[in-house]
Image (tube, rainbow, N blue to C red):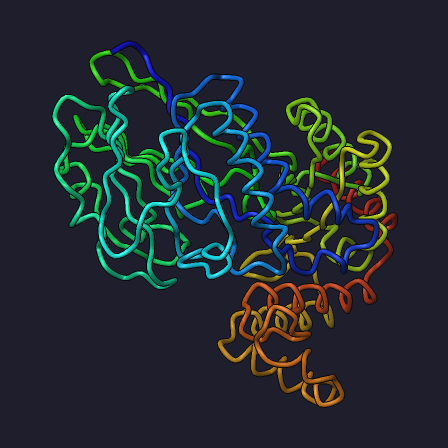
Length: 445
């Protein structure tokens, strides 16, 4: 048996709904919403061009029940292309597409050998591809919240074949994802398979133990928001005549999310932030290789510009957006600007503050450290909340006041306190001139 190739992908989330996208002015909504389909098309194209022998998808092909049949038809079209190219495809269901009712009603193409594309639920199933020397062991989720250790019941390896375990799992629960189908790397290693193709965790990583087989999350093939940043795609395995394998990453994403983090501590003026962003953007455009780049700017660090940055955040965003358009044309969209700066401080209070400013800074710091901050803000917003429609209340993603979200609380508090401080202080240009004068005085001393 000579060298053979397997494409391992997971977490396609076909037609995943991207919520709150419409709230951004000039957002390329259609390009982003269609990204998961285009990424799936890239997967098919790569498999055919690279002449792989088998494609495996480790769960979450879909993102729940479909809005209409077009989502299923999009997958059927890509699966049919693989079958026509003589490439078998095996898919297991994960927590997002467990026992999808619409899938059950949609006729799917059969693999070149006449077998089904989806592996069964209820118990592990082994598919043999004797002409390739492959044995694939896998099991689909029966329900969305699969809490059982499915791997425990996976069968022993088939002697003389390359044994691949296909599993959707939270592994040991050390990620931000829900802990489904829990198991340990040691348990998977004990199965003595040659490779574990995992899905569910959207960050690529190998959890192999020393001397054991690769235990690999391929990550999702398309980032859907800023927390899924960087290149996304699949893994191509090369299996040699002795059933040893190596793998490499291939990018499939058509939209790339990236965060630009700028430490503003050493900066004296807002223009320097724009310069830093422009330099970062030039590098990212080169590496994006023609993809749509969705950028978020995060400003952090202790700075005398703290109040001004919060107070004039709209103007700063406009400046950065202008740079995005000028240098990125239609290839770059600035998704958001997060100001997470703080005042230069000694013990939490800016050293040069005196009188009312110092008192104000003390009050702000005490409130920020208080465990009752959310309650205080909630009480202040309550009269306004009573005037809002019901769909904007509660703890849903559409809530106007998500009081259980600590990041939202911190952002609101920082913006409000910085706005008050900005009204009490000189303008940005005056502050910059004063800072420059202060620095010269220090040098002279």
